[in-house]
Image (cartoon, rainbow, N blue to C red; front, top):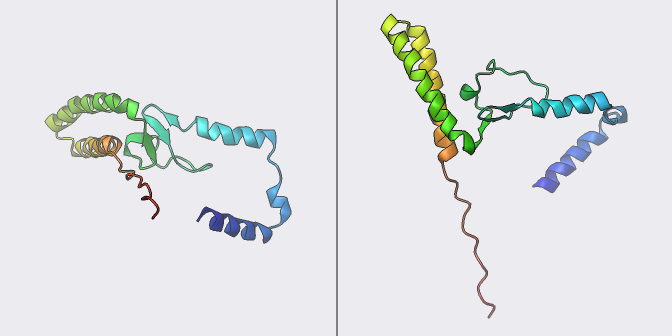
Length: 132
């Protein structure tokens, strides 16, 4: 599959003008590397593509592009606990929009926790049987 995709890319590149494939300038390369440094956030890393803005205004817990760092699971517990008091306050004051926003954040937070804790079956490798 990888070889097939590489062949596809090579064919596409053959159809494009060669000047599109120049070496990046040091400034361009620096900007590219900086993009990935900026994707490191408190609880993991942002997987959004290079050169794209944050569509969620840095509400990372709500973003599907957030890849959780499993070491930060205790921080999710803290964030969840920190949202309980403001939600209670919003409920006491009848702030339905605020309640909805906090509930949405809690839903995403709990989903991230579940996804991060979920084990993944990699399968058991099978050894070939003895030759007859």
